[in-house]
Image (cartoon, rainbow, N blue to C red):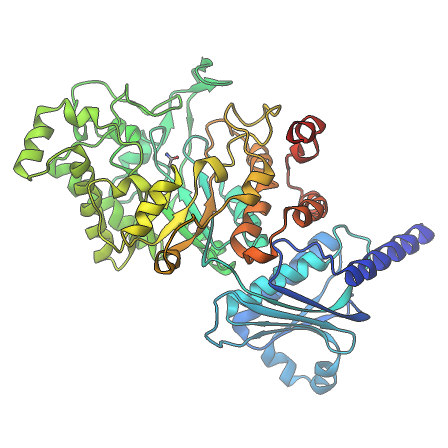
Length: 551
Ligand code: ACM
């Protein structure tokens, strides 16, 4: 046993030395600049003290201590700044090499940091801000072993790093399938480990309304449960089993707090004016066909054949004011997502009452009516001091410049958004929808795809032929996970890994540091990290048939 541990340590040390010599580390996303300093090393052990420059960084220090203890079994101590001063032997302790976290508050790029490891000084992480310190910790984590029992002997190294894009997001649809708060927190942890900083929470759609509304409690009484769902792939076999769930205000606050500690902003989405069957199941009078029976959708798809569209009626606008105001109060972040995608305009065309509303308001077509809805919500959200985000259809019929556009269709819509002066997030369905299977042979997560790891990695976020001004408006990119065929947490993990890791390098690392060959090498170590975290992942990357097909 002793011999085995000794051998494991030898192997770990020699692999670190090789890494340092070859300057091939396994950090995802790839940092901007790595400099190695000879063959010096620093070993983290149970006597390594984590110190912070100020108490605001204590969460990050505890986070690191928890990671090292939980995954590697080494209990590190965290020293609060005030207690270390009080200690008699404070001077002596401070001179011992340990881990020091410093927030430089230097106003430079948010999230930027320097990580310095040396034999005599230990580990120093200096962030441009608190987020930078947190990302420095994520990089340090990636220098640690990927399993317990291996000595964490780190190479002397200097890293200078900062993000390429300010917006680095992941989305999760909790409507088609509902995920408990514990998994939402786990998902947020995965984002943090990848230096992602926005969590887009898709909370309402045809199949359900998933947040308690104090102003409209009926929404979760009637709108959070569907009668059943299809088994297997669409159209499949119908399974008449009620399926439901929603988050209380208290749970939402807990998720927001959890995300904020990890420097992640939650962007909640209420999808209107289409995708509203759950609203109409609760309030049939809000539709253009109030006399027809309504229920939450229990199957998937875009519902041209079912009426899922809000009608432009005074009570509907008053409802929108209530629910968007309540979201603004519940979610402290700056951004609220209005959806706006895939609105089936036939229901407005077929409704005489709606056509009359359009004439009365000088709206020349249904696109202008869609825009009327979005402008209305924008005003509500702006009055609360917040900014509206919507899927790229919100451009139809015109929209104010301060709305952010999320481009999910063809990138030409993103280019149009940039050219009309909108800050834009790219999440093109062909490159960053992780509900697409990763390889042709993979049946686990649904029929669409494939979307290979390499394609996600090579996703060109900045489209060609833009002016510098337009490029400046590219806020960043995100991956999406729609959950029609993802009823369980393990499938959610299987769908996002390893593609979330490819996305993270794509949104963080400078273009000239990106290399598919290097990433493909590093991803093998990333698989070991997934194992360490207990996360499921797809191994399609290794499958022979896919490798052969690519040649
Ligand atoms: C979308 O995929 N309908 C945004």
